[in-house]
Length: 311
Image (tube, rainbow, N blue to C red):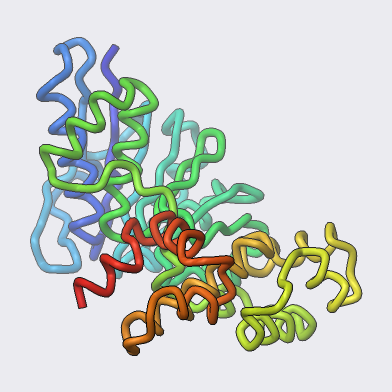
């Protein structure tokens, strides 16, 4: 059965946020039977040419009374204006789609329309703190590339639009097809996390003083016992309370925060010193080089040794 996918664009939308997912669905259609192919439609509040932030224009059909299986909202420089446009927001007052998907900062438009309230979501790392500040009821997961929460899906920035398109294809047609698409388009297959290699964890949401002090303690004492129970004792909290506060203010569990800070420290050492990798692993607080290597592959899809070789 074919799926009708709409791409809602507005003035100064980001062209990559549109073209990336379109390329994934176009490639999928090359390998699907006609009755299962995606029907792709670029839409706007009014029919006509819509200029992207780079100046290129796309012709958009009028959304009118159409209903889609999936509605994809790109981000871009114009998303803030779009998020205040009453005509655009009015579209979401009816059931315009069975599933809503944001790419990059398109999450701001979904949030303004009330679709992300109490939902798990992600967005481009550079505006994650702002999204959380404007919409405190969002469960922000800033390190995730793709987040699925019921009928609302969101992706991180720019090329992550291709990741979420792959996720949508995989949900309906399986991994065999998405692996093929990835090979043809020369892109990774379904990245799941890793945005925080670009962002300071403490910048996601300004934490209260006791969490701020814990983050500073972690950064300065990477070789110490940084288990959840040890950190909880230091903050005079229960382990459950500590985990709740970390998730509220960073979007991550205490263990994930510790690992990310250790990885950030280790990466800096690899890139800026000639220290042996085993010494860097020890200084970063990892049990050994093997544990550090596994963490690097999880986060960066590259081993410490290969990272140093590329420098």
